[in-house]
Length: 192
Image (cartoon, rainbow, N blue to C red; front, top):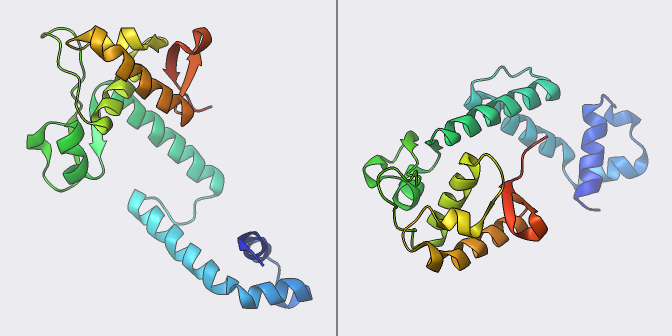
């Protein structure tokens, strides 16, 4: 018996199948995998999530998906404008934001992005911050960018091209970016 077996029985229960109507194999899985407890835990978790979002508890799956897509679009638009909704500010702000913003609670903070108007900033030293500025550059771009184009927004651009290229390659391997021009240029992967 595995997780798939347990979740298949759970799906039958959620579809309205009565326990007495389950076949012998499914009843054995129901008992051994504690599917009734699994159902209660999922129900509690679902209630906590809808409460955290401030949504009604009786939403359909399609309603939830529509709300999540709308929230994702709103957050993406905020990030394009440089507004980041920090979820773990004590961890994220020191690495990606302005240190004065680290209040220890969820906050909105401006993401520092190279815009070329006040001199070029230095490229961050740590990997997480490097990834953040590369993603920010891709988010603000009208089209795909290559490593030299992103590096040009920072001091010592020629020395950074290899490092920016490595960040782009990692993001591509993880599926966060798509590549064009034979893998040279990258763009953020967009949700359908």
